[in-house]
Length: 199
Image 1 (tube, rainbow, N blue to C red):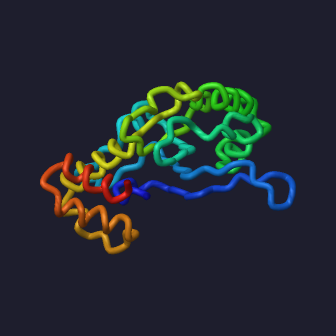
Image 2 (cartoon, rainbow, N blue to C red):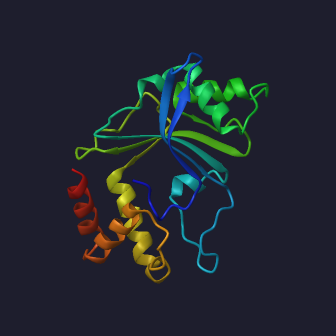
């Protein structure tokens, strides 16, 4: 489910192809870019998640979203896969002297700040009712639970209700979230209702 509250460039289900016909090396559930100077509603800017703005850089995210997941896709540990991820995005040339450093950072910790203007990171998005995704093999990668994401969406809807009422272009999932929001007394109820629908 893509949040209607996060208007940043997104690609869903990005397949990283191999060299042989029909071969797939891995998949990125969601590839996102948040450009450094992004603002929504300049008169009263809508705050983005703190981790996306703290380094004052453009953020590139490789998201692994799995219900109940405790860990990133094991294929993402392979250098070849990470090289293809980075080549797909195209923010660093493979002949740039930084390319090996960024690849090493991502393979070992899941996050790189080696490129001056970019934060490149893995993101584990999980619906785990027991919140077990505390540590992953990518120790520096970001982790967000679906509960946290839904709380963010509720707060955005609540704070900017008048602006968000104009949403005819949203996907059906966004309309559904808005409907649940309008039927919820508070954030806790909203999160619980949405989670119950996708359990």
